[in-house]
Image 1 (cartoon, protein in one colour):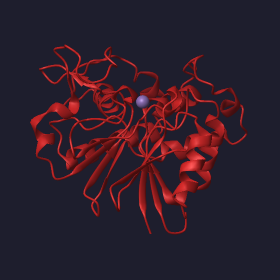
Image 2 (tube, rainbow, N blue to C red):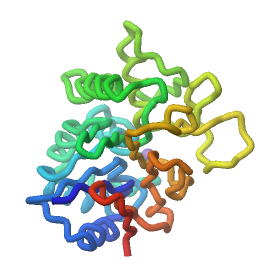
Image 3 (tube, protein in one colour):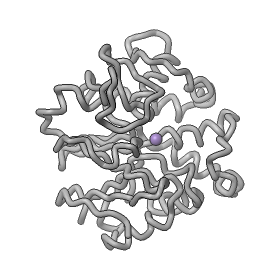
Length: 266
Ligand SMILES: [Mn+2]
C-alpha cells in the first residue's frame, strides 16, 4: 500500500499514464493525490479526466484554477480559454458526470499519516491547517451547492487582500479560491500578486508565499503544484513543488509520500 502525489496534469495524458505504470499503481491498495489542474493546455484533457474519474475511489483531487474554470465554463457559461484544448472534453457525453465529480473534490487536504498538507497553489501563511481545511470546506459547499453558478461566475475578481471575516460571502469565496488555486507571490503586506509568474531569485518586492518564517521550521510537509517556473525547487525541505512543467516540455513528477522519493515520467 503506497500513497502518491502527482503534479499538474494539464491534459498530458501520456506522461500521467506512464507514471502510474512506472510505480505499478494499484487502485485497490494505493492512494493518489492529484494537486490540481487536471485539464487545460495539454493535448488530451478528456483522457486525463476520464482516467481520474475511473480511478476516483483511489484518488483525491485538490482543485486548481483550470479545474475551477472548467466547472465555471459548464455551470456558469464562462468562456473557455481558446488556448485550452478542451473541445473534446466539452463535447463528451460524460461531461455532466465529470463536472459533478470535480465539484465533489476539495481545495485542500491534510494527510495525518504523513503529516502532509496538499493544495494546488499552497496555503496562506497566516492560516493554520485547521483554518485552511475549514475555509476549503466552506468554499466547497459554495461551488457544490445550489448557488454554485453564481459563486463561480463572480470568482474572477483580482482581489489581492485575503478577507475571510466578512459578511460578503462572494468576497470570502474569492479570497479562499485565490489562495488555494492562484497564489504565487505575496507582497510585504501578505496580499496576493496576480501578475508575476516567474521563478525565484528575481529582484522584486514580492516574496513567494512559502518565504514566510513559518515554513522554515515547519514539521508539516506542504505539497503544491501550479508554479511551473519553480521547476520543482523551493529551497525548503518541507515545501514540495510538484509542477515541473510537463505541459511546457518538462517531466511530470510523482512524490511517493511513504518513502519521500520523487519519480519523473519517462
Ligand atoms: Mn494552476
